[in-house]
Image (cartoon, rainbow, N blue to C red; front, side, top):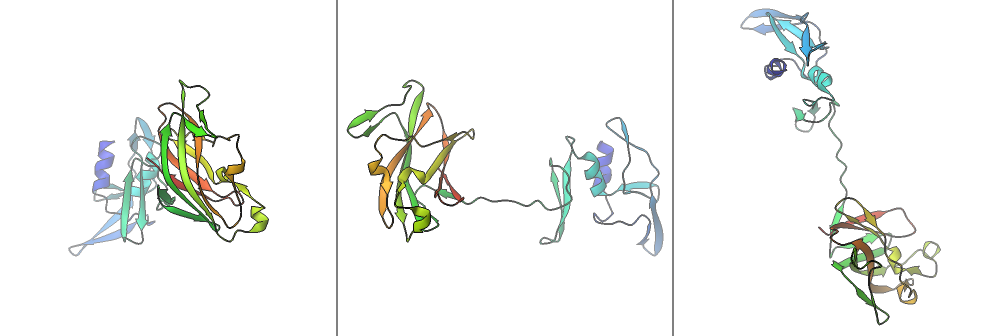
Length: 240
């Protein structure tokens, strides 16, 4: 294995080259690169490299061919040509693809940011863990006091020129706070309260309210997902 890596370091072939035999000019001399007939052993198994050459008695292996062979092993790596940088890129510890990875980035917001989705503005001003809250003059505790807390999310909701067909006559405020997610990726839904009148929001209005998520004690919430009921679009608010 170490000898193979040593050959990689002195690699003289182009990563994208497909030539089986060619000439190399050096100080007026011409040397031939021929397909290598050497047998290689990798992890006690005979291995064939598609692009292995012999030049003046030395073996040269195309880096891409080595990456293909090592794919799925502890020594795997990816190699590809980056057009923007004009360089060959080697990434260790990842499977070989031969192409530049596509990085999908999600837009993540923070507490205090205003998120706009389809003419709805949502701004979370505070998010914290609490043991109880007051509703209609009564103190509300979790169902199992010893094992649960509440995650409290206070936010402002502003409806701007809503589409009446999508919106209807009103919506419940907690429809816009979709769920929260803990550090293990577990999702929690908003608790439905007995009093619904105050939780309704009508077109062309702005309101502030607080919703509650029953969670286990010691749970670390990482993010809150917000959205609107009539379209499949969500935004992530990081709270960690």
